[in-house]
Length: 209
Ligand code: MN
Image (cartoon, rainbow, N blue to C red; front, side):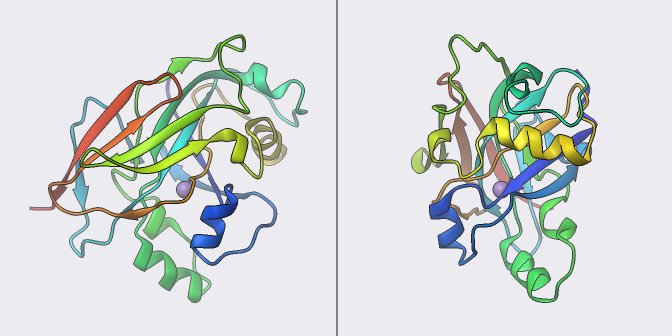
């Protein structure tokens, strides 16, 4: 399935909202172009020249069919698959852009900013959207533990919100927000995530030549 768009949700876990000093409000929705995607076959991620790179471990939803103006009851039927990925962020640059009221693309939508693990078909009988667990590791050390029960806006609500302004298309991805525990990456770090089914994916961080 071809991805044309990556939707990302900001400020969806209360403890992460607090660790960045933000306030809860409506869902924050932004996008990355599909060219930001890095599959697990690509083993390395490029560190920006100034070393400004943070990981955010996120549960990822893949949309399976076209729909708009959906309601919460029908929203889950639009999910084709689930997985885990990283919303890589240039945090220093983000703070600067935010303080100047400028758009986020330079800190969020750069090359390699959306690594994605293996997607697994969504099975409503096995996958409770309100109780999916995932985790992020740096050099094998647990850094983030996510549980969708802690989301401010649950997955079905996110699909509803996005479908108000964008007609959802097969292959669309939704990075659903990060729990607390974000942090910096360095040259040589191994960045890994475990998805809701226990599947692990890893990339090595490499400084640009
Ligand atoms: Mn994020």
